[in-house]
Length: 332
Ligand code: NDP
Image 1: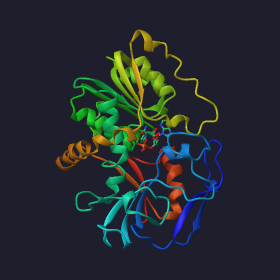
Image 2: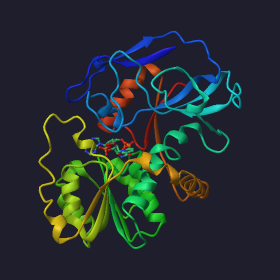
Image 3: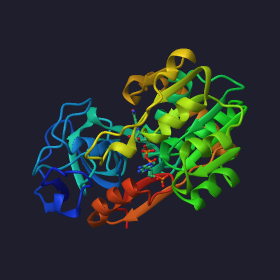
Image 4: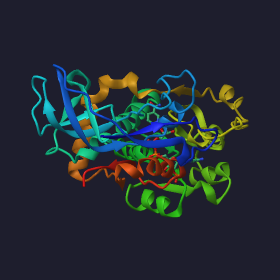
């Protein structure tokens, strides 16, 4: 089998030299284990944090060891009850061609209900992040005006559409290209969107939301968070989901410089971890799959083919090469 190892801890932006694709022998199957051929694996922003040797909510990747993360694959051999050759499973040993793991660490998924890649994106971890962050953390309610950054990504594109479907008065998104901005307004039903690379974020948000916003879903941090704090109305709420503008930074961001506004406006800024919200999973899958079936909710995926392009896919995602979920496909 082949697997991606982290071989050096990146300083700032990772480079291909920080990673190596290595051959590994597969262990013999023990009782209760299955052998999975990975068909798709996920590359996610949080993995950048795991490349640093710091304590966080997920442990760091170890040097010269395989990296891990979400993956879906097909069972090639099974010594576990309830798992048969040909079954499809979702599990946490991505970044490799094959995985041997205990059946208690996998979930069966049904390829006839949704494409397998959807379990890594719209119906998977990023989708639940969007759903729980907007509804449970930001406590979105009908009539709220919502701004989401990183709006053309896996999480952001779902946040905006869920807000629209749940009766937002206005949905605004920001993204890093004019093409993504067009997708938001023309395909995903956002009321307004802007390209943050085209000018000052605070000014562009003010123009897009003349009456202010009630909810901010933060995927970006820095100047986006500062702009949102300026635009939030009294008793506004922000779900702090990610701060991708800082993940490769070597200096802390000076923004937000207007945090004192939190007082007078009585704002609530709350961090969010998707792992706290597993209880919402059944409700989330039912509601989202209904909207997907009816065509009311759309999603995109950017697929990169071949395990050898896994690192390039990860780096591309950090640069904004993806629209919707970035996925590495080993299927063909
Ligand atoms: P995306 O699919 O959104 O991919 C990342 C995107 O970030 C890129 O496509 C790029 O789009 C954008 N980006 C990169 N650099 C910058 C920058 N400097 N400023 C603004 N945008 C930038 O990833 P996900 O949907 O998987 O994740 C989105 C966010 O949610 C991340 O911050 C992630 O860490 C967080 N997250 C948090 C979870 C939690 O439990 N707290 C769980 C899952 C995700 P563009 O072209 O628009 O620049």
